[in-house]
Image (cartoon, rainbow, N blue to C red; front, side):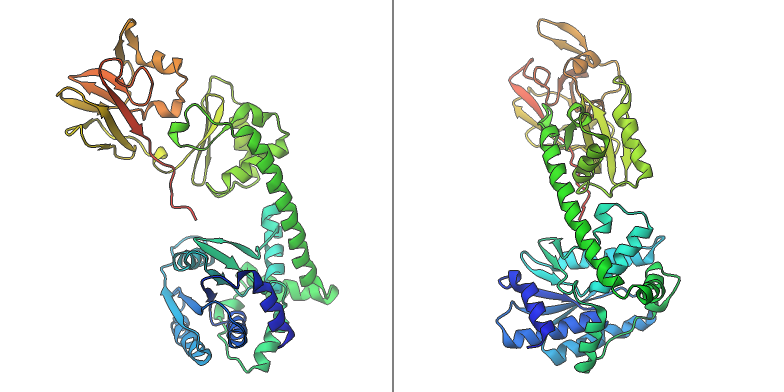
Length: 438
């Protein structure tokens, strides 16, 4: 068995018991070599079921012939092939949109526990580090491509990151493999192509180990990012104390404890906390965090990010996204009180107990509302919400239940939720932040 086959088998050892291995097959040199290597290993070792996936973007006329090429290659090696046709959204970067469409297809196809194998190699890693360095990326970005990460219900794995492209090309020539040459790979208007065909070869003239050293630097930075993640987790453990408004179902942090950290640790903790929620802000946009943190206590500042907003209320930071950013609808009539009431863009209402037959309407605050409370008489709703320190962003969404044009209940607020006037209670399941994030 060749040295390259041995190294590949060793890299894949932890996943030998996976339900399946899937290969992302573009038909280019790298993925064609990976397919051939894995097919060779499968003839000698007991491996998970092997299959290939080709994603067709339809961006070039010449690409229409690539699925047939991949089909012939897979047929020769006895590997099943699945072809996925995707639509690429328009925008400033077609390359980025195509990548997003491709990975969306990969996520959908990869089942629980399965491994998707990508053929990026050491030169790709060096190119990625240099590309991100020139764009001013931080430590997380400069860590470049991870060897493995979650992908939907499965795992994405890059087993060739230690292998130079020249070694893959030598293998392909030795085994007389044919592969596709993507015409777009020679377009020098694309930044990555300039780095690949001009910048990196020039660097290699003076530093022959440039690609290897850049790839090694990416590994060092990935280790540094792991340490930053561990620090962030420790810091978040001290600032993520539960809120009395946990029923909102919103991510939140205690602001005062966060302020006690140094500015660098604040940003590190917030990056870690925000990463699953939104694209992270660039360096200039982080000024919004300082404005939010340092605003006067009587203000309700907002830091707007790509997929949502960070609000400050009740001494905490609150993340709002999804339906929380949509306006609430007009008043709604509640016809069948035995059934939950869906509030457009604002969750659902439930009535626990029995309300006497009445004309029931659900409204939202407009200002000036008054409730009649036992032993307290008429009370302004704004004052009642202030007493309970209800976050400002919640107040306009709190469902108010009216019977015969009289405000009888405010959902979820003890003492105001209906129990004060009868044997029933108004319960609200708020909307979610769900935005379909990967």
